[in-house]
Image (cartoon, rainbow, N blue to C red; front, top):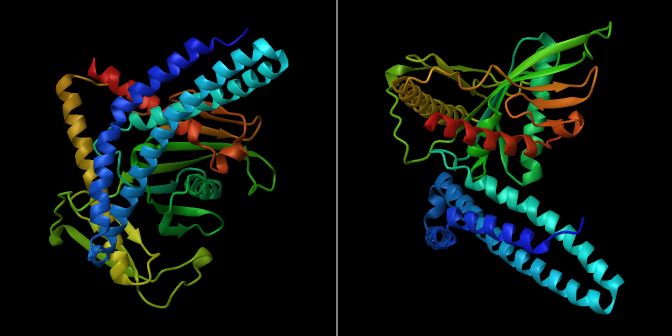
Length: 377
């Protein structure tokens, strides 16, 4: 069936206009101007954390504006190409057909990129625009679970690398035989929290265990936690009396010593029992500062969750939010990765473990928006 370019382009323009209304290009331009002025301040780099936040936000805002303006131009170019193809077909049918083929290719690409732009407009939560701290913990399944946790760490690291997002390993606790007990990674990109928060939950792996000499199938689990990075405007006061700090010597795989000083820090928030460990910085002071920042972020998220739970209780909503198991990765007896909330799936686990998870993330964001819409009814 021939493509109805007139209706297709009209639909693209309608979707694009909705995205423009939400994204607010004029607001972006003002934000860019303000951030550019801040970035030019001579004392900006006296506070490196603030400077990195400013430059990161500026880069993201410029990128978003460029994508928005480029998309409008691409739709205009597509419409011009279709008009050219129609005129060319009257003179040379073969040449016109070639232009229509090119238009079909551009149309498919624009649809995909519009979908990506639309996803960004759905990230409107209080902390969605923040950078993210992601923690992975091995669950049930012994050495296979520890190996699975390390596979997930690589998956998220590769995803960040594919998107050009800087990452920083804050803490790693290695398992004795293979893999990791836990790891904490910081992803330094605007909207990293809103994007990755749909990855939080229990992940399940089914495979032939490489650690079982009888080649039996093994099921193992790992938990993923995602929290927003705190900013200067956040008000999370933690009294010194509420914190217990232990120092210990950092260690690598198999107990190998990383350094010979007690630079690693374990921080316990006594009222909630939340424990944060940091050992990947060079000094105890740096590890302590990193641990406090992650602790503040977890308390910030806890406060938000408590407020949300209170609102649901007042509304009489007794539905559970997310199930314990949100995604299954199966490599035997068949090849499949499936999200149990959205039903989005991939038949290529190797590609998923190599960081190709955008489809899962996009489906998760749309699912979450749908869940919130149901809660508001």
